[in-house]
Image (cartoon, rainbow over all chains, first blue to last red; front, side):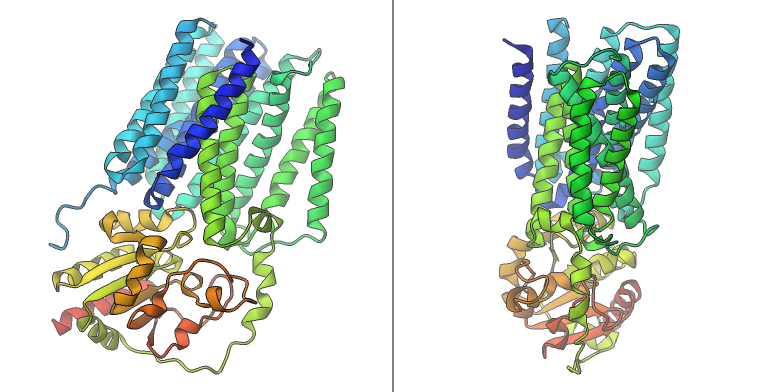
Length: 98
Length: 461
C-alpha cells in the first residue's frame, strides 16, 4: 500500500477514536486532560531526536537541541503536574471528621 | 524503517489511547496518566535505538532531555492550581514552537528543491500552525497573567488585516515551493505566522480565554501530527490527532457553555460590545445581611447548594469553603456544589481548585446534573459568580449573554450572594438575582466572608 495514504488513514482513524474517547471524559477531569495532552504533545521529542541525528550541520543540531529542550519540558512538566492534580482526586477518607 | 520499530511505536500509541481512556473516571485517572508516560518512554527509547550517533549528538540529546526535564519538574512542582491556565497556555506554546523548529530545520536541510508531496506540505503547515500556536499562546499567557490587559485590545480593521495576512501567508507558502533557495522567504513566512498568532489572540477578552486555550491545545496536537507526516512516524501522528480531537471537543464544550460560535469568539470584541449595557445600573433595591444573618439562614436549611465562581479562586477561598463544608456536613446538612463549565479560567478548573482543598469530587455536580435540584433546595450560596447565574441569559434577548445556559438558582427557596460590592461581574452585566426578594447580599472578599460565616455558624451550634 502507498505509504502516504496509509499515514492519512491512520490520522483520520486516530482523530475519530480520539473524539469517541474524549467525549466520555467528565468535566471534572478536563483540566488534567489538558495538562495530560500537553505532556503527550511532547511526543515531538521524537522529531527533535531525528533532526539532531540526521545531520552534521551545527545549525541544524542547535535547532534540534532547542526543540528537544522545549518538548522535554512539556513531557516532564506535563506528566508531573497532571499527576499532582490527579492525586487530589482520590476519595477523601476522613470526610467531615476534621 | 524496520517493522519491529513500527510495532514498538504502535505499542506506545496503544498506551496513549489506554491512558486517555482511563481519564474517564477519577478512580483510574492517575494510573492512566502513568500509562501514557510509559507510552512516551517506549516511543523515545525506540527512537534512540534507531538513530546513528556521533559525540555531539549524544551530548545534545542527553543535555536537552536532562535540562528540559529539570525545568519541567520545577514548573510542575511550583505552579499554583489557580495558575493552571497559564501553565497550559505556556505548554501549548512550547509544543508549537518545538514543532516549528523541527519543520524549519527540515527546510534548511533540503536546500536544493522541494517537490510537491506530503512531506513538504506538512513542513509548511507545521510552520504555520506551530508559529501561530506559539505566539498566540504566549499572548494568551500574558493576558491571563495580567501582564497585558485582559480586556480585548481592538485594532481598527483587525479582521481585514488578519484576512490579508492569512492570504499573504498562503501565497508565501505556495511561492516557497518554487524558490526554496531563498531562505529569507521562510523568515518572512515565519514572522508573518507569528504576527498572525498575536493578532488573533489580542482582541479576545479574558472571559473568552478558556476557548482560546482549548483551541490552541488542539493546534499543538495537530501540529504534532503534521510533524509525524514529515517523518512518516505513526506514534507522532496518532498521539497528535488524539490531542487535536481533545482540544476541539473542549473548545466546543466551552463555546456551547457560553452560547457563542467559535467564529464569534475569534472575531472578538465580546467585552467591548457590552460596555453600553451596564450604564442602566438601577435604583432597584436589594437586601444585605451580616454573617450572623446568613448563618441563621443556614441553620434552618437542610439542602444547600454552593455556586462557586472565579471570585472564589481569586480570593484563595478554596480552603475556607472546605472548612464551612465540614461544619455544615457535621450538622447533618446536605451540601453540594454546582459547577458551571465556565466557572474557572479553563475547562474543569474549578473542580481542580476544590479538589485541591480535599472536597470530595462526588459533591461537584455539573450544569445538567444540578439544575433539577435547585427547586428542592433551601438555600443557594453564590460565591464570586455572576454571569453563570444571571437570568438575563434566559429572559433578556438584548443581553450579550442571552442563550447561555445558566444555573437556575432562582428556583431555590432563598439565595445568598457573597460578593465584594454591587459592581457588575466579568461581562459587565447587572444581575436581577441581586434584587430578587429571596436574595440576601453578603458583601466582602470571598475568603473573609466565608471565614466569618463559618465563625458565626459555629457560635450558633
